[in-house]
Image (tube, rainbow, N blue to C red):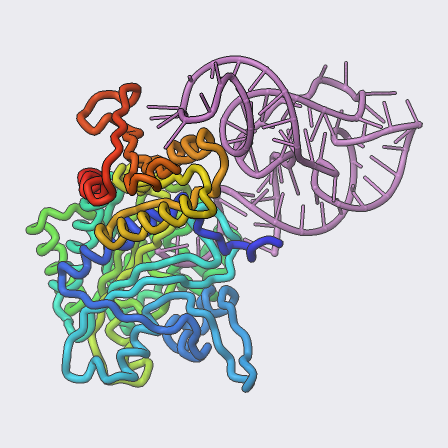
Length: 432
RNA sequence: GUGACUGUAGCUCAGCUGGUAGAGCCCCGGAUUGUGAUUCCGGUGGUCGCGGGUUCGAACCCCGUCAGUCACCCCA
């Protein structure tokens, strides 16, 4: 049996990385006063159709959609923003108040897997509601910039920003763009010809060189921006300048989800191959109302955890402290009618009682003394505690240092001492 | 959905123009009785992705199929 395509297991080898990344992000966003929200993996399909947009690729062909036993159409969430808005609305969190929220978890999209792209992937999302000023857009960028610094990947990512304007302004621009491109339709690449009808803005970031050449003379989105969008964007840029955040204005930058307007941005890297966007987001002032709430300004972004992990790995920004080898490995040698093992297990329990943070391996699976020592060494434990018939008889324990002698000397002169239980336990405090 | 490349031991891979499989790592055991990471010796482990075809004979050639990877597309 194999796992479902594009849905990967997270093996013990890598899970410390995830814990490190997740806790670092949580720490960062919480330092800006954001609180965690959790919502279901499954929502009514309608929610995504109304938010993401009915004619987007995500909704048209990438959702895991099925009817439940009542015949209601449900979908695994392909992203978090829609559910977040729904949850806030449902519980009145947006009524005359602001919210700064974050969430994390798996998202599902039926796509062809490749590097940095899976069918079940994980995102951390950040959303701010009820604030319309560009300062909150900037806050998200400052926050993510700080995060890259915390992770040590700030040199590998660059920020691209753009303004999409209001939906009215965008509609006018879209019409102009379509008109321009329709005249030269024959010269466009195949994909772009198709997009002309479905999602013309997407043609702007086509990878086809010929198409890019044709776009040079195309109408520019920023010429169509309304005054309010333009002012908002200019203020944002001023704040970023003042905060020393470098960015590139990319007026070809668009979003795949319909609900974005005004500010959009992406943090991208060239270290991950084709899927180089590590974090993306923007403003979506219309969404809350679109989902039946009161008109509420909102900005948000989402990071791809797998992509960040890949980036940490390629840049070798993996903290050494992640290796969580045990402090103590307890071996039980001999039998005495089960007494030895009982004694060893009782000792392990009192260690855990005395040191709540201890990582202690016991139950060594028996075997010869030699093989138990090998296992103790392989476990990476700093200390082996040896319990044999002698120790049981005298109510003592033997402590052997496996890494160094406890006083900095090398392991070949490893110290071994036999102490009464109480003293031995206290002695172990040194390495825990 | 399209394309390219790849499927040999738990892992990383070798296997020349077809002669019925090999290395390293890992794991287990041993090198005098209760002492590890080095060294030495020995051992476990493979329907060569699967199905067909060509051939006296296929891991190797041909066809199909499945899986994986990367890219297009799309996007975090």
